[in-house]
Image (cartoon, rainbow, N blue to C red; front, side, top):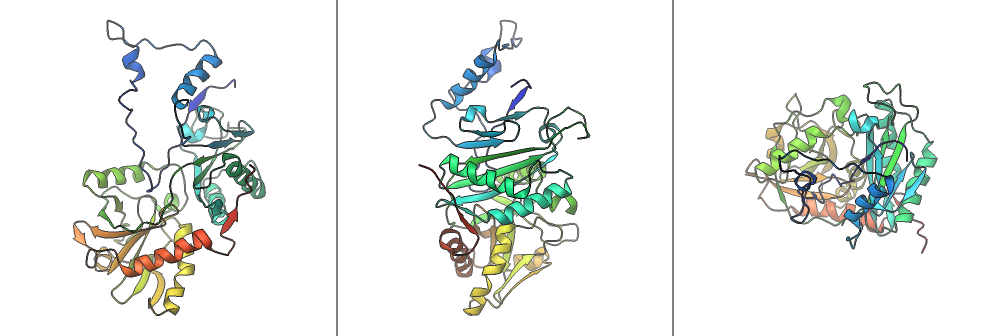
Length: 367
């Protein structure tokens, strides 16, 4: 490939796994291996593309399991199965300007869950970011299904991006001839969460509604809010908007069950419209019919009202529901995982593994 490539390690950014970004003890930084006696770094110059490819493949050859079984790139025009070749151009505006959007679908028991809902949101995000797709929706969908089939992955996630594309290092994307579409399958466990976690109120400013309602690649506020929580021994954080109402978590929605057994989701007008949260809004009335819940609604909640809740939870594609039992060192309810939270979790989990609706798309694997 003639253009300079940026090696892009596709690390899962969700709450199921937080990959360790520190090098292992037997992996020395390049600089330390290239130091001369005068402590000046002597940078190696690769003499050929084959030498570089060999170096990249050294990272993955010892691996018994490929964390990223397959990738699609519209720049390549196809699917690659070698993790060493999972690269994107360094002059892609998603890399150096953040001009890109993404979304994620879960792969569970050989099915793609809620792919169409995520793909629709993906294209809405792209429209807000003024990125046109190089393909019609039907082709994007077909590529994602074929990629999943080629990966042979039965459980994990499918993540995909639309970028303004490669072209130059300017601010404007006017010089990018063609938008780019990338996708990767990620081998990671998906399971039902039954233990509660601790959260904090984030002091990191949340995104403005324009950027919060599109799933774009500018996740620095999200990253900093998670790091802030980890610094305090918490799992993650809660954002509060400028009006003092509960917004969302770093990359998940949040919901509450009041002492009157009302299930309340924060309004979606200033936050990302979570596909899993919206699916739960469709399923939860079943618990109302059973007399377990009084009502299901969206509303504005203050921090004080939210902290008086009987139960609290994160909701996201890979969780799918994670109980929250402590917030800012204050227990939620009795500080234990609530029965209604687990009833909702069971309802959603059943929909993911055995639902009969259009949410579960079987992947046409070829042995």
